[in-house]
Image 1 (cartoon, rainbow, N blue to C red):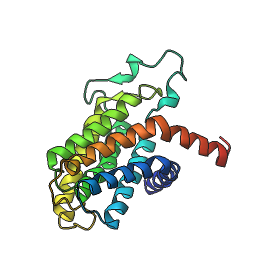
Image 2: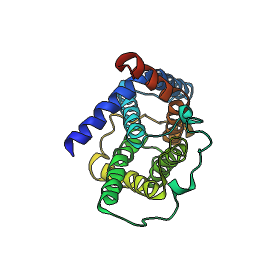
Image 3: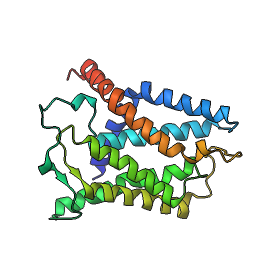
Image 4: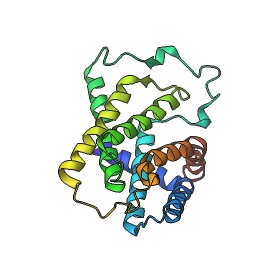
Length: 222
């Protein structure tokens, strides 16, 4: 288990570094919008924001999210009904239970980091919605790369984000070092988590995944 987690962390770090041409402009954009709205930020917030993006890189890596590279790679078989499950928790086995638990644990840090960075507007409901949104984007993208699109994953990922928020409340709620200081109660901060998740996913879908493939060819030869 530990070796598996370490390998995911290592591979996610590589993908994070390969995707810096995507992550850096997103960070600059938010810093510009915060400054324009007179919202002070600190270097600690910027560091926390990069930690958040590293986590998203891990999630995209582990889930095998599809991208623009996958469209057309498998002929006309973009939507395969036999690989879409819309009925929750059917035909469980031990391997399925392990996978569901891993999905929950994978999104748990997401539920912790969202209120750590954006306390204003990051309520339990908003955090759950953010986890649901990001998971839904991934599940839809998996229609393009021959991976199963499963409602079980969507449910467990959302529960993981919800559990992460509870962990934040129990352990980290007094930690304000990473938070953006939203003195003006700006809507930009209230919805920053949602915008960040959307921009990171779109950046990965259209730019990040091709960049990762490019660097793998250049560095590793495949």
